[in-house]
Length: 148
Image (cartoon, rainbow, N blue to C red; front, side):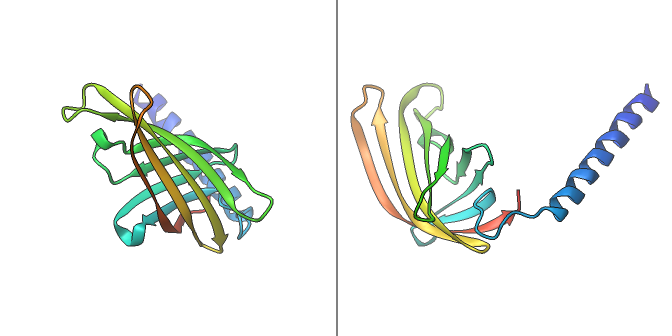
């Protein structure tokens, strides 16, 4: 049993080593937004990790309390003007985190410059009936934390 576990662990390590070598041989283009970034919103009022994936999906984790909506998932696209845009969605909850109280959307349009990007965003919160309860727009900057 121990040998089997060690064998699986060794195979996993070899596979990961191969992936790391492959990533080093094929780094993303300097203008590519694919990868993981640390973003600062409204001059540092909030921060979040954003992962732009090759297949056009995006994940965003914000420094909000879970009840406010800190996990966002959605899609992104490269625009003809050199910018990239994503729209993500998430749920909001009551103070105890047990019941959904609504949902929100965030749209962002960004321009990559090497290992950083900047842009603008708009977030809109809704109650469960679809009524807007809060809207905010602002600017952001981001720094790449991983290549892919």
